[in-house]
Image (spheres, rainbow, N blue to C red):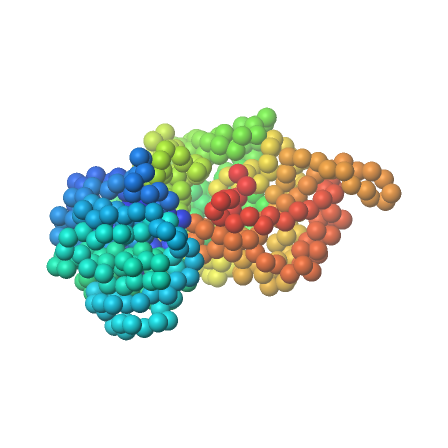
Length: 516
């Protein structure tokens, strides 16, 4: 949606921490984008980056299917930073040699800086306490011509390298992770010292640029905004409303897959407090019919997504000049729905799953380049209340992907009752704002229990509570046993049809946050 005069381009080779690199750079108020390693050279030139970062990755540069970026990037005249696999690839493409390390390094290591220039500017040569984080099985064994060593560790004699004359640097460790205590220094030196960027990427600058871009694109047309009451769609609505005012019509679709009382509270908030024009569409029966007999999560997502598009188009016909549909696609949605290494997409997202090409409305996605915490900051910049901004993420397909297996009114009712208890107790205990998401999942199994000396065979509820910053990675929340016990007791005692509660202690990766 917006353009950026300065940007850092990250070419992703499949590292689990690539998104962390982007976040660390953006924290320095410099915009950056993640693209697949195989992005064509002409496309890279068209992006006009101020610098390029080659990410880490799980492959060896000598694997038969090793991912390789175009070596032409080294002829663009811009700085390049290679991280782990990226440093090894740089070494090989310049004629050096990489081999399996005699002793692999995973975890903490200590860096000895021998050349405190470039990315190590301002740091001390010979300092014994620079903790970094290693994660590699290969290492640089023979430097390419015109490269020199800038740092070493106990098991990596070439832990960091640089070209003598050209702005190319490589590090064997990961500066983006918190365990590398000098990581921010290294990235700042690359961004500002080598790439000569200016710290201009702020949420105020984003709002100003986005408002101008929306006005230019929409002109005198009308925009239909898909409003759910979540953070993303609320910020989208506020942004577009600031840009075009009454040319915006928000449509709230009650798909019957919302939490208990949520439809009423969303409509009340936006109509009474925001001044937005909100059209309420009751489509509960439609979606329940569409999901009857469907258990496959991808089919659920597609049917719900197609249903939304169908309804939006039908509503748009009531506004003769409606030409645009706005929705709250975020950067993690885009990244997770695109295969960067290999051909496997993790899962489709309801708002980036190939649906826009089916629409007769042009798409506006003003948050497409933002992480979740950046969206919250934009919301605060726009003056939205904290009760809207700090609402936990809720999936577009709603409870349909938290009721595993077939969707029925009865199973939805069970999950809603459990969900109310989870939110009540998390808020009462002060953990609602501390966790990224906390919710219940209804499993497609039943287990034997005993209640009042009688055998039961009833449903299982799984509790899912995670800590995260941007949903790209997440860890399960270490909730107090007392709270977990309270949640279990209340759900089993108060929700008819449930006799067992389990707690999900999986992290992302390898699991996803939502079960489907």
